[in-house]
Image 1 (cartoon, one colour):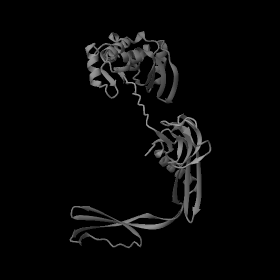
Image 2: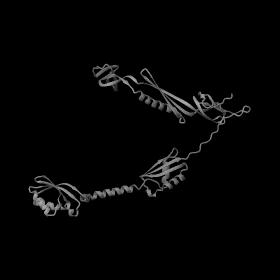
Image 3: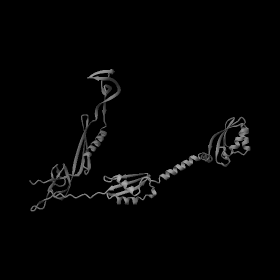
Length: 383
């Protein structure tokens, strides 16, 4: 602190502890030299604690030598000490400033290019095309115009239908979608009917060609005729390729039986073990323990010729599951199982859960009611 002019700092406060056999003389000399004393407290008969200004510290040092007073600094506060610490750590602050400057400078560049494409749009190919227009890792962000890059990619790659280029931190993100060829229309003029692919209850019938032979609320079975490949009046009928949709209410059922009341086998935590070598079905024990358990599980772990046999004591414990929780869990499991078998076009419109108790078992039955198109073409054989 000697190298810093303390007289310039007025806001700094020091809490000191002064210890002397003649403490009153020390205090009188402080007042005589116009040194401000604040929050003075007596610790004991020879010790005082007080606050003084930082600019007066050098005066107190000389007075303490005259009165043989021991001075101990207890606390420092004020902006003056922050300035003093900053001056001592100038190199550190300069280093932090330079480091922050380097990080900021590096953040103005693109250091990686992430490319997301589809099927025929290979990321390597797009990366090469970007390189031909000067877009590569290390380029400055100010030299990047995302709109122009998108236009250039359209020109360089005819397979691109849509692209998006965005700057995300140090990365350039490029997303490209493949141009899709329009689907070819296949016309089928063969004579056919529409039949039911599964059982159901008819809700709506739409026909583009052919004659419907079922109506709303009819119950149909799998394979039953729905739309006949025939049009015209009674006097002039002609065969056609039946086309249309027959929306029906379909039913999917699954059930599960759960034992909700009874006894189950649990391990008590007690165990014993044996170690032996098995030679032609004869056991040569290296360690053999006495099994005093009435009920137990045995697990054998073979490691080469040596077998480790662990014997765990078990006991029968009664249990009873919560019926409502059991039904809810079974319902979710059955619903997941049925959903896996449903066509994506099937719309589930209702769920019916039934449960019944049989002895100590709970039988849960779930019925999902869906709406779907059950019409499939069936070729007409005129032979």
